Image 1 (cartoon, rainbow, N blue to C red):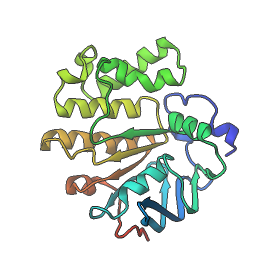
Image 2: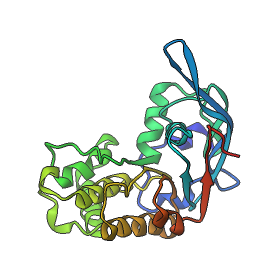
Image 3: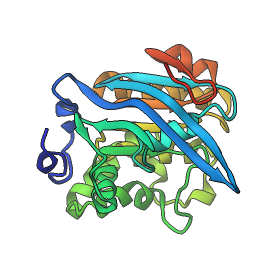
Image 4: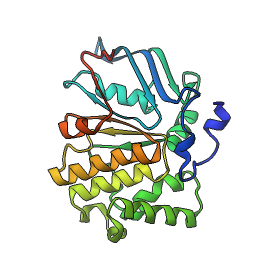
Length: 245
């Protein structure tokens, strides 16, 4: 896939059907190494880690605190760069892309779901979900249609006008899921998405992410300690000391 094709506008609904490189790979990390400076020390985050995500996969990453999970998500979400090794998105190396190009790629092709929700408190539910579409310049009529459909999909159709502080924790996480999915991303990255949720709500979020991968062809990568989540994943990768075989 050329860079021109990769950055060509906002994907329409169902655009995930065309996601991935020629071998179906959405993202690859090859012998990825990343370290961070802490004072005078260099702290390793990844040690020659390898990961291949294919279209439609639901993949969990598990490991103890400090094992490198957060670093891996940062690299896969194109929020940070490797020191050594290679990261490829849809078959294209991202090493030569500048920050503006990486921002555009994240905006169009990657959805993020955070443990702390990261909703904009002064915006309504509908406007929070619409925000990534507006950043992409999608026409307002299309924005309204897609937001309405996505809120119905996550069971929040009647709460579009509320603000985040008027919602429960589970409802906020569903808003965050809707915001991540509304642009039909190729890759969804979720960091402990069920950590703050009760069992019933956690189950709903797990089902939503599983259906996204199965029904819409998106690839889901989730860092989690939740065994309920890993039971629904097609593959579980275990990290330790920055190593992902």
